[in-house]
Image (cartoon, rainbow over all chains, first blue to last red; front, top):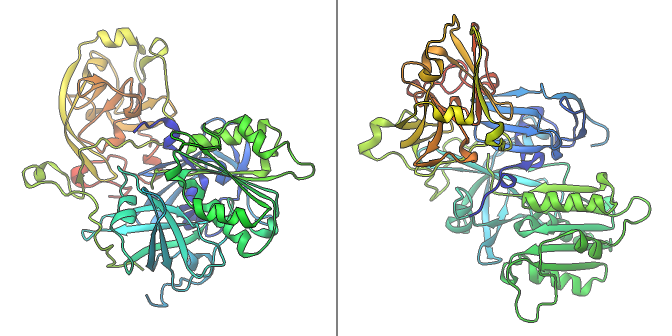
Length: 92
Length: 257
Length: 204
């Protein structure tokens, strides 16, 4: 079967389960501003690299790793260095 | 299955892993079958949401995948359409080994972005590639169950006629509901006498099927399928003048967690 | 929830056969495939723009173009590799340049290095874990050019540590006096990653 890069990523929708474990609220509708290029959009539209070691959500425009989450035993490690801001709430 | 799984209610409770029973299995195509699953205490879902399914082997090894719910929120059970991926780890089990009466471990419903209710209105354009039709089918079924004649077009790309998932149901619904239209394209093989499209979805096809951008808010598009299809369709819809905040995408594929 | 639950008929992955069992670290499963784990898009750096640098705590940085790099003495090694996601693959055959060759004659007081890669990936290693015939920058796998999805044109190979240390698309080694956690090491994974001690996560 032919596989290409395009087959290797999904999007933030598929990270919904893990994001809910971390945030405890519906997080895929949170608006994230990329620290790399300033683009803003819902977490669901970030590109998900569902790596076996953790989930990496990247900006579709500039590839910056905006959100990184790894499940380490009974805790989650969350790295938001790639996010300038999160807009939470607002009728989601 | 006891009542002890609820962890403080709310989201935490909803996200707990729970045991569910496979009630019925239906073949949709040679590669896709539907599992109807009863989930005790299920508090319903929104069309477009998914569940995570987790398998556990006797030695403790676990594998987990997400599957969109294809059934209407109005149903008392949930249905998942499982496509068998030959090199997959979970789908060969769900599409082959599982039989009615088996217990599955799942959690959900999950997702708040790629969702639709009749109150969100339309007109709707639902663009599906292969088994990416599942969450869109939940929207179609929800619309029918709620008996709301929201103008809806389904543009569905499949490889061949035999691989069109939910074909009979889509045709049957469209036949009795003038506000629902289903347009098929077959990308690999077309049967004799095929009058539908016979190529991958492109800008010209979208322009023909969706028409020009509507005045006002415009149409509400949901696109779900393999990553490349989704990205191409979204790009084309924006180029055709449709509003970015009204084009929602979900990439659907074998990538696991 | 789920304690003790078993999915009827789900076999999961293969445990190693008895004759190779002593080559498989604890908690690992044997695979015959070569799984691809992607933390980002696959970079496509043209070979005429590719270079490899050794920099940091060195008197003068070293730089090789692709042609210069490929002209360095190389060797073929057969190694077992172990991914922290629990697959192990035995007898993998690689062709590449020993890190000893790249650092040969270099004066440095550094104790650590950071591997830098196209796409921004980094991983950190003690210098003593990449010297003395323990690490390579490989450009060939199983008799062919290393495919981009597996890290081509060149990746680091440090087979005695979990495979995330064997950074794909590596472009340079930065020698540093102080250790600094890389991409996965800063997200809860073990700083060292010895598969035989099952050092998967921070604190193991």
